[in-house]
Image 1 (tube, rainbow, N blue to C red):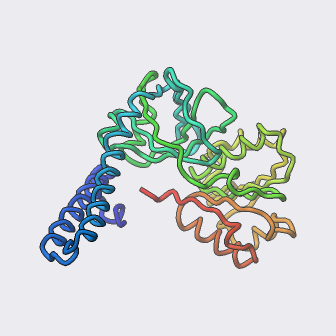
Image 2 (tube, rainbow, N blue to C red; image 1 turned 45 degrees about the vertical axis):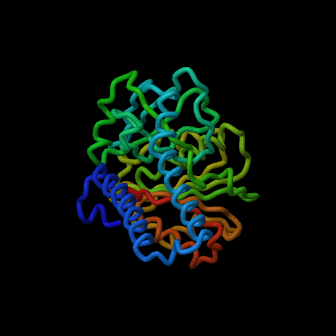
Length: 306
């Protein structure tokens, strides 16, 4: 909370969280022992002892056992692909193991340049589809110290992957009538995974993609998304903040008027996946709910977690 406002480096933020968790645990022990009331009977001592034991076991698993297990299942960088929008796609392959099983749209914690024991993992959505077996894609925009190093990563660089995680996936939210995807900037990464998966499965439903960006030249996967329409019933609506003078599409923010122009009459029955900057996600949710879309049909992922 407030990491960006206080300009705290990501690695320092992680260390502060770890320190505060341990400090809170120690202070709780001191308080319990000092008061005495909470451990005055054998039953109370058993309860508190069990809680403390579970906490220590969880800490041991998360910080030691699981990272050591990741060391035995490494990946390596196959290639780096330059994308539009100041982004790069990191392509990794498993080393002598089958790799992870994931659902389209999920994310992982990725450790690179350091051992997974160092607490320097970063969360990234998988931008490839599960059907694309043998490799994983992570499409990453240059935003901080770690992400700025992606483009210079050498082929063969070891990578460790903890995951998958997340419920932002079409496979956990089935829809009879198709899906509406709303992406802003690099928020297209998990949505690309879902769209690619739908195309690979030969899905015959109708889907809509709203994709907002500053300019046409900065829309990541622009050509690929248009190519997907050859095998997928997909309508694409691009919203540009700074459109060219001859632009015939939409511009500005995703307000009710734009949504009404492109959504079908049965819009309340569709499932929506929204991913991007916090203000865009909040605006889209607000506008859709005003139009009668049930809240349980709105699924969002904020790219402002860390």
